Amino acid sequence: MSDLQSLYQELILDHSKRPHGFGLIENPSSSSHQLNPTCGDEVTLQLTVVDDRVTAISWEGHGCMISQASASLLAELVNADGFTRSELTERIDGFREMLRSRGTAEPDEDLLGDAAVLSGVSRYSARVKCAMLGWVAAEDALLKI
Image (cartoon, rainbow, N blue to C red):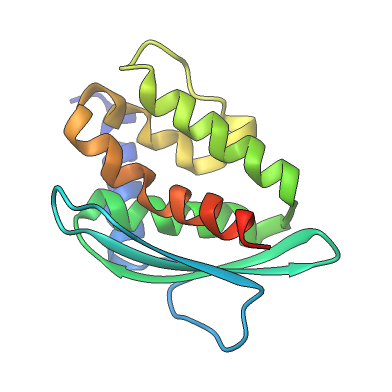
């Protein structure tokens, strides 16, 4: 295993053990609950939106390391700077494109931040839904606003 792969695995493990944005809040602007029926992973994700800007993501869930780390990486990305709704949608679309590439697309680290480490998941179709779970919840929550 290369040093880079080892670093990626360490980052994913860290996010699954110590998730960012974990814990639901009172009175979010929007929320979405998503379930992966294939494996039973679940995520409830909440958005806080102020003046068309997503300022925070909070979430709870359970499931595999990939689904939990992915939701944590998304929360870390958004909670660091916040994004307009369209900027968050752009990141969700970029993440989806990366995961559908089956390993052929280079991840856009400027767009996805540390979530780019999940690019290796694209080689395992059964894991793509796990990685997308929190991102799909964010997409659904945006549509409800």
